[in-house]
Image (cartoon, rainbow, N blue to C red; front, side, top):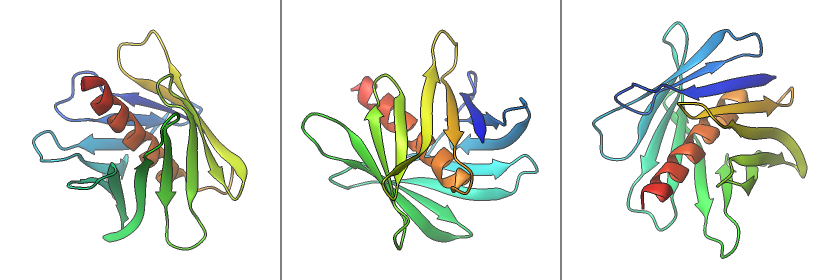
Length: 161
């Protein structure tokens, strides 16, 4: 499945609209504008929350937690490496994703069980951050899309510093 994820330009918080390959809005991510640490609600277009993303503060590594149905579903961890950034999406059991690539150029992929299952690419020359995300059938689209949002937040925070 191919998605287009676009950050809303004039939003108070980190808001994103996600469209399918036919250009239809299918998800909305509502970022809380006035909170300590990032907090975002990942919703379908009817307003039903599918996931909740929360930055974990006071951690050596950058960590974001993804909650689904009120329970911790996954934790996105920015790994500390010398030469190349990477992220781990820690899901209980053998379901982890490794995220590797060039995060500064916004070209990266999700690895699951040794194979590439999703690819993210940023569109340049747009007013708002816009990403194309290709996800193989059978993968967890919501977790991958939520992780792409987390990576965007981490990159923005690093650029500000």
